Length: 329
Ligand code: PMP
Image (tube, rainbow, N blue to C red; front, side):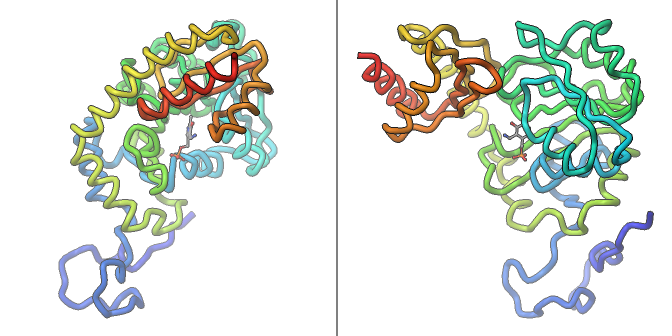
């Protein structure tokens, strides 16, 4: 397949007069097309992640990268998507959109990926295998050793979705890219970097995989405003770091506070910015909170009696606890 070559692909140098892309010549911040490969942003990401720009893809949220991976590396009706539920719902939706059959291997009762001998029979195919770490909605991580072992035993691509990795102390799977040719790591600016509205996701992999994603993506998949928002966020790393610290300490505080409530059965350990919490009757708590104007994520259908509660500001978290206490009495 030959990639579309845009005006901004064909000439990248310095010039005074731009008459190549049918733009509006009147100056404004947004009258020009953005860089199709977002090189200025990738340079900053490369520095932070210690990976070369050729190993970085930037897209319209990690959701774009997930869809492009299906389109590039799966054969509709033939390849498979291997998932470990309960996990992030878009893998299944993207698989269905691309006519890819899903093979589900449930996590163990500790929310861990089962041992290799259990999953090995499922690996006898090609396609994509998704490991979400920290996992949404359970909050726990998969070790680098387990990821390496699975990748070694699978002929398709292993996608490690690290949307929540900034809240965790675990080592990123990006460290494995050099020695694991079939590994793709996804990260995002939507969570710790506070840019869910800007839609900026990243995929890291060897240069060969990244060049395929770049070839099939829409030419200008990232807009100028989002590229600069992401660049600015990276320049304000110290602010982001202190926000992450607050979330981490709120995570520990809220875990203890929730556990004190009579109708809370357990609060699962989390390395993300949410707490999966089991109640005696989660549907009742869910609707009662809604009545009070507090929205949490109802995961009862996936994990019995569980609500996934995002960590808010300390004030919001206090309001949640006060409301839950009031509902009990
Ligand atoms: N992966 C996981 C595990 C998520 O929870 C989410 C968002 N809920 C995404 C990816 C999507 O991220 P983005 O906003 O970058 O598309």
